Every structure is written in structure tokens, then in C-alpha cells.
Amino acid sequence: MLSQPTRARLFARLASASRPVGTDELAEELGLHPSGVRVHLDRLRAAGLIERERVLQPRGRPRDIWSVATDAHPSGEPPDAYVHLAGWLARSIAARPVRLREVERAGRELGRELLPTPPRGSREEAMGQTLTALGFAPQRERPRAGQVAFRLGNCPYRQAVRANQPVVCELHRGLTRGLLDQLHPSARLTGFVPHDPDAAGCLIEV
Image: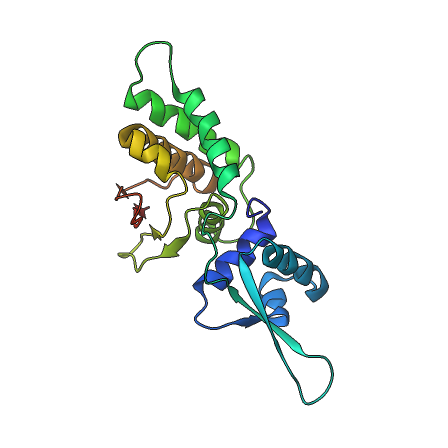
């Protein structure tokens, strides 16, 4: 569901909002027609990720406002997340015993594949949208001068992390570096701080 870029942007926007947001406002921010945005919002609502409230107007049709569902799973579709992870882990395992540097290298290649061409717009926004689509529920942190930082509100791979945290987190580190290679080749991953997967809160600093 959130692998579709427009839906990922809409979900990320609603997740960061302090109040419900109207269809027209979302359409204006994304530069899209309200009818098209409404289709994506309805898909997100059908998946249980967002909620709609209809506000009566003095004249005309009711106004729809949207917010993230209180019981929404931040990763969107958990089965898809685990299928992807299984494939990535399989690719990271060499014939000889797994070494973390090999896992990181495999993750970096996968990160580049996720963004074969640099997206338009802000690199920071593109990074946030990609992390959202992957199920990490990122929130922008207040960075130091010249830095960009995301606090991850969800670990979509927590079960695998419990089994082997060093391997899974190193794969994620490499994945992040691969995304940066595509978004901003001169950027450097300056901080990557894993946390308890059940509590989430991992920090990425660029």
C-alpha cells in the first residue's frame, strides 16, 4: 500500500499533522487534482491506515478531513514487509559465514535499487517518503546545523531483529547508505543508532 509514492506522501503528511487535514489542502500541497488525491485517500482508508470525518458545511457538500487511524499499523502491510526482508536477508548471506561488512554491502546495493533514479523535489522529503513506504514511520528531528535527522517510530522487522539484531540492523544501515547514494551522492551517514525493536526510536543522522 505505502510502496505507491503518492500514498506514501499522503500518509507521511497526515502522520506528521497535529490536526485532521482536508482533501483540497492535501491536493494543493502535493500539486495534484483533488479527485485523484481522494482516490488514494480512499485506498488508505480501506486499508485501515487513515480515518475520514465528514464535516457539514452551510452550503454544498460535506467537507472530508483525514487523519491517521488510531489503530493503524505504522508499517502498512506487515506481510509484505517480511517478504521483502526475507529476500534481502537471503541475498546478504554468503557461502562462508556471514560477516557484517558483507551484509552492509548487500544492504547498500538494495538501497540503490529502491531508488533507481533520483526523485524530484527535496532530498529530505524523498528520504522521509521512502522510509515511510518501508514501514519505519520516520519523524524529522531537530538536527544540528547542516544535518538531517530522522527518528524511526516503528521497526517493521522486529521479529527478525529479535533473532539476529546485528545482521538485520547492519543490513538497514547499508540500505540507508544506498538510499543516500541515490538521493545525495556527496552526503554521508554520520549517525545510525539502533534501539530495542519493540520500542523503536532508532536514529538516522545525515
